[in-house]
Image (cartoon, rainbow, N blue to C red; front, side):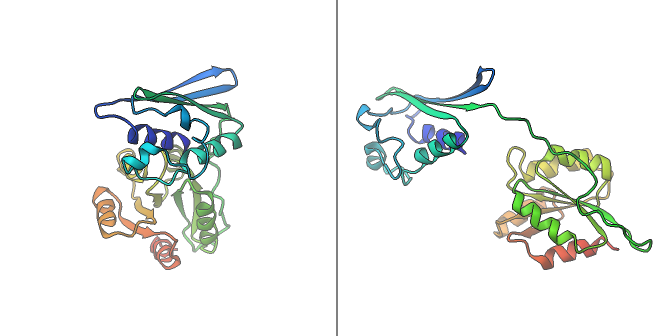
Amino acid sequence: QVVIHLLSNAIKYNKRNGTVSVTAKLASDTEVEVRIEDTGVGISPNDYEKLFSPFTRLAYAEEQEIQGVGTGLSLSKYLIELMNGTIDFTSQPNTGSAFFVSLPIGEKVEDKIVAPLTHKKASTDICVHDVVYIEDNQPSRKLMEEIAYDYPNINLMALSNIQAAIEAVNTFEPRLILIDINLPGTNGIGAVKLLRKMFDKQNIKYVAVSADAMTEQIELALKIGFDDYITKPIDFDQVDLLFNGLGG
């Protein structure tokens, strides 16, 4: 979020034919530094002290009618400090600015593919289907898990990224994959293209999940490779049709 905001500022306050560069490096064994540098209008020394104050708009932004409410940098500073990091900058008027963020290196966290969370002992006359839900938002994954628990024919694996999903498809061969459209990194559109290419021989139904209910977005998703589309907040009736459509 911080890097996206700094990139947005670097573009908005740049000059015609200007440039923006992003670099990341290990500053030490325990710290990483990200630097966003531009060739824009720069920041006046008179504005340095108030730059990270909330609801502060610099004179240039007002003159050029640049959109914003002046909360981005203050929020960025707040987020960085929550992560025990620092944010700072250098700038020269009419030359450009450089913002640099330093953060302690965190532990690597990976999804572990285990037996589905909603695994049930089904009776011999029920065919149990594995279902994958790719969603980076933890509360949304939890909600889908709670919904799926009421279906004896469904074993749901709620995963946060496409890499974990690929391993799950390799291991469990699911009949249904639900994919959030706005995944970070490889988004839902990229994910469905990749999965269809990798597992084109399997009988898998791909369903897009999104808060965007615009007709154009739905048509695009179906054209790109999704078989169906459901909207957020999750409609229980839509999920019911999907789960029962797999048979029991």
